[in-house]
Amino acid sequence: MQRPPFTALASVYDAIMADIEYDAWADFVLDYLRAEGEVPRSMLDLACGTGASSGPFVTRGLEVTGLDASGNMLKVAAEKLPGVRFVQGDLRHFELGEQFDLITCLFDSLNNLTEAHELGQALSRARAHLKPGGVLVFDVNSRLGVRELWEDDAIEGLATMPDGREVHYHWSHHYDPGRDLGIVQAFCRLEGEEFVEVHEERGYDPADLEPLLRAAGFGRWQFGEFPDYAAPEADTARFWTFAHNAWPGEGLPAAGPEAA
Image (cartoon, rainbow, N blue to C red):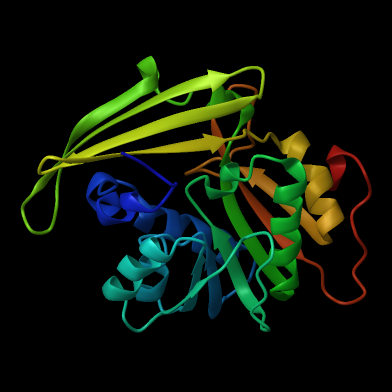
């Protein structure tokens, strides 16, 4: 049975993604900020899903708010992190009425915005929720990464749920050159019950992000790879962006790659 993206998947997501390096990602982000002389206290985790990306920042002492479009995902997050505020909202249009030292959007979540103007909207909303001098951190799959997502274009396995049940998953990928999209069909079976979700992603390269970051009003930005912050190259499949909100009176960067 086909379900909308990030609905049925919520119940098995953490089991399937148990090996994801969320803790290492949190250290990667915070080490960068410390090197910049920043000590964030408040944080907004966009597309927080089941809270797996939020938890490591909570344990490192940040006051975290999570936002996601999926009520199913947020229900899991609230049960897992009962002291954390979670809000349902659209990345393109959310308004929380407050600002944060740090905003994150991890695990290629922004690739799910398949039109550049939608990504631009999300970047603008993020900047509006940053304090002066605050930083937005996100990772994306590059155009290459979306074309060649997995070896043999599929992943398959068994994952154990907290209650001991096993979920069988088979996720297949193909690239649609006409639409320039990567399409993932996520099949899961749990005790005879099956569902499929179809997810679409557009790849973004640094050259695609720079005009969007500039239009959103960010003061400066840097692209880097995990875990060593190395500059992305032509064969980079995934890279991170650290975008800084300007202080009052700080000018926007000039056009061109030297702005980064």
